[in-house]
Length: 232
Image (cartoon, rainbow, N blue to C red; front, side, top):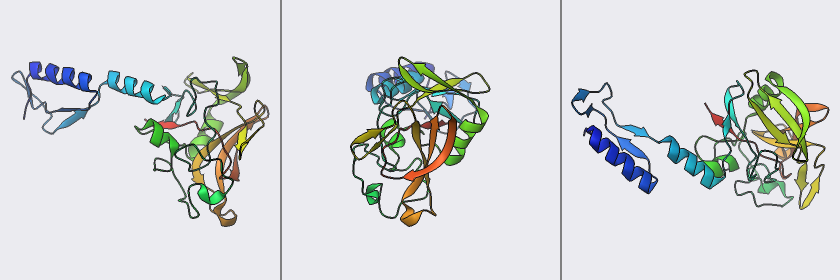
């Protein structure tokens, strides 16, 4: 099936009204042969932007690294706010249990990035996911970190070699229903389990303070901030 140019515009109009994915077959457009012989699925930018607003998704920021980093935490209305405090593997973001087997189970996978245990993928869709340990390490090693305060919230301004930047609030963490270390530490989950920990109780996180950032293992039931990444 091929579409004329007028048919193409009608398809665009219908997709905008229905907020749908466009399935186009541009084998031929008003008599001009196309090099595309197969079905092409296009998602217009306006639809992506509207869907991101509906989901509360951050803006992808290019720091000159292997992935794009979100401009805000999961659950945050802006870049300086902490958002949700989430246990490792809690895709719903609602658990406050201190039973490690609830995050997400007693025998968790070694990497939950992009899975149904990843709150970033479940809430923001697309290819948003938790960063890996290596991607967090890349953020630490290849960017400049500055401790600063934005709208009264302390945290780290992270500047890439290309001039792009994001802000990570020092939101502390949650242990059960108690909140700790806000304004002094920022703690963010990676997607990776620490497989050699006792009964696999820990996963890797990135922790920072005014002294700088590092990768540390933390108990999976701790509620930490989530800063997703997006595949380029």
